[in-house]
Image (cartoon, rainbow, N blue to C red):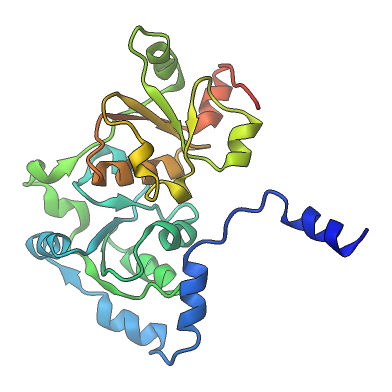
Length: 249
């Protein structure tokens, strides 16, 4: 084949390069402290009140727990990017490289969370919430939860007189291969830039392929004041496993 044909073949359906690629390229031209030295300085426990003050001052509160645990209860305003998925990729995509980060993790996993951030140049961690979510045991006013529903429950809601808007946050090529009827596709990588396209006057059902990305999306939507949400547990994989129909373009 010709060079042009080869180029078209290998670049077909490729996702956009994450924003942190350019950020890392610039960092690589500068002299920086080693990651080990940086982690020794930043991995410090922070009391809840100080975490709240840091959040008010613009710090990003990053909850790295499993999406199911995050849904049960999390610090209001935090963003969920679980360690069990493509953590570094999505952290580099949705987090702001210029703002400090405070980590909420299961005790003992704080170093892993900071280390994997540091590997993509996000070494501006300012500590982690001391005792994790246990620190919020007496502050229920600060804890939010996400309603997660099964595929049959979502199907019932979609068939009701007042159905939710189904927001599919997968990549366009995934959506084209099969999606829920009447759903709209707004890729997670573009969600923050296109947040104005999300209606605020109706209930929204969010889903991805398996439930990892939808938890990130829900936390982003909550940060923008969009809270009338449900999340499809297990994503479209669970929907298809329950023998519900999908449509294709």
